[in-house]
Length: 307
Length: 307
Image (cartoon, rainbow over all chains, first blue to last red):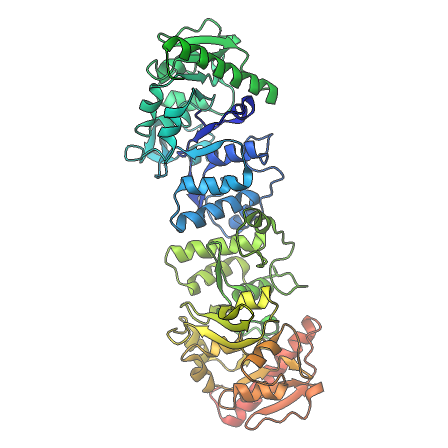
């Protein structure tokens, strides 16, 4: 299974699940290496997430952040929590000692025990940058700066996966895909989360050989969460359940779950089914994941896939 | 003026004061560079110290430390506070960017405005290690491990300033001494604080050319604070006000303030005066510093010193 929002998958089955996490959002700040998507999966499935905000640790404090600001350290827009800081210190220490991100992620998961195998999409450094153009001129800024500091409100001309072309999938990624019964694309941001993973050479090809079912992150023309519409505009894709499926493409996607609000969506070469997609709680989320897995099984049977 | 305990000096005079801080206690932990003595001076004179414990920040929390321990990160014995962590992150960042410790200390003091010029004794890395010998065998450990983890209770065979021989005084140190009206050695640990500074080639010689007055850290045969006796034992010096003065030596020391409990202490070649030395509060501390400066002025007059 693929993506950064793994809440659902964990709870549907006892079978072995691998989550491939986006690392394009990763950023180095204050000498710390921050991997927001890997950490969100780890904290969420490990019971440490701040559920209300959907990122960061529960019972978080921001003393380090406030003190860094008092020293005049920039940037000040990043929500660096104290508990979170420890995770980034461990990761930065292990990186400095020469460990690859995949090994570090495994070590961090030794504590969190997320119940899935969590792999970064790559051990190489890939960073999503956004080309913006305002009265300060045309320039590329880190995705986090665009997303958090500018709340994605600064019009994006282009979204670039810097380093993606030379990146290799992390150890275990291609094998996990090859051995999977099904690949599920969760309703994450199709451009900067799912899209970043697909930009790593080899991953899209490996998935295309499997039965892949995606869950639409767009309901009734608007993103369920976050600001995916701003990312879709940047790459010239309409914010619609069907448009996103067409963008991902029938070579990749076999099935696509849309919300009942989008019932009747038709995408050539992709089996579209509608059902409720609002993740109102763990039970709803589990049901969505189960529906995606069941659709994948059904389509795999039709394809005569290995799985 | 010299030393790491600058509480007193700051308050005695409006004249320009330079504090030369010991960096032998410095340690790298979790990728952070920690300078306990420089920070203690900075926080104390800048109004950020935890007055009760005499180190670290006021209103401190220990979330980062607890989280690092939850990841199994070692060591767990170091009291790394959250506020303090931000200081170490700034310092580590600037070191990684190539700035020398003296420049970094100046930058940190931009926030704290301690009212003195705070200089590290050296920009080179000097670390105090302690040779211990117990059932785990003879080995050298970092001073902080001996001091904090073992509470100086592990008998020390030797105390070594690793790197001191090749170290150079930080920019400004020798000039500050040369231009000083007087040099005051505060009642800091004579072995690992004052002693470490004197181990940097050139500093002792520069001071010996000036009028130097020290304040005894030993009252009635016991250290006023801390575990200086354990350090003195390691270098074979008796824990006594007179013995410490003799150890520092008449080539360096012109005057020596001892507590009234040690009145009658006689050290060849050094002018010994007694007065109350317990730092019971800012007023008492100020009076001690003032007495040291006044004794230096008196002795300088006798010597016909420049100052």
